[in-house]
Length: 225
Image 1 (cartoon, one colour):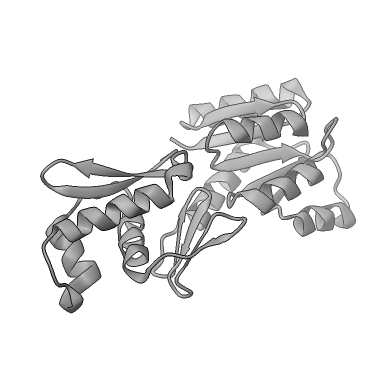
Image 2 (cartoon, one colour; image 1 turned 30 degrees about the horizontal axis):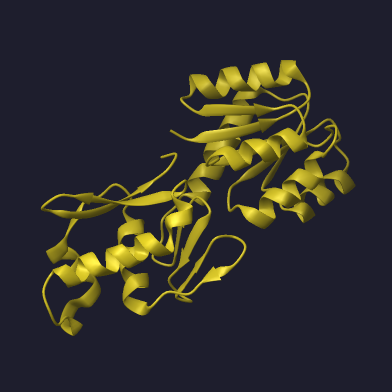
């Protein structure tokens, strides 16, 4: 299930959007201003944010900038303003899409689905697990704020599991896919590398976990999916 943040100071807008999104199977977390939205983000994984521009305390532009600096998730901005300069400010702050009020709820739903397809498309190069991004081209793992450097085999093991979330890999498969001809030793080598990955990413349990299926192997579970 995908988790959506809906930040808008208009309770009628929140009720309308919540109805449409929950009907589609999304879990919606609401905030009436930017400050409250930040607290919601801290409580657990959010997969997409829908935020109004004009809000008290912290407005939508500031909130968009805050999210973009810390999380790699899609952002849709809602606004009553339809001037090009206002849209430019939204895109400069990091929004992915822009919906002008009044809007049709079904149109907003279509845009949400389109952004999920774009963000969650798995390629051979970029893999995303909420805040964590795996870049196979540059052999880097990022949490949106900093780059986490891993030894090559740990990186390849994580990338292999993450590319197919929910799929169970046996130790033998992982040895063949990750170590191949370079492998020397027994299949417990996989266990050692998994243990190290769990230690490295212990603070990211709200984003993904590496699960053990006793006697068989391992799989990655991405939170919110």
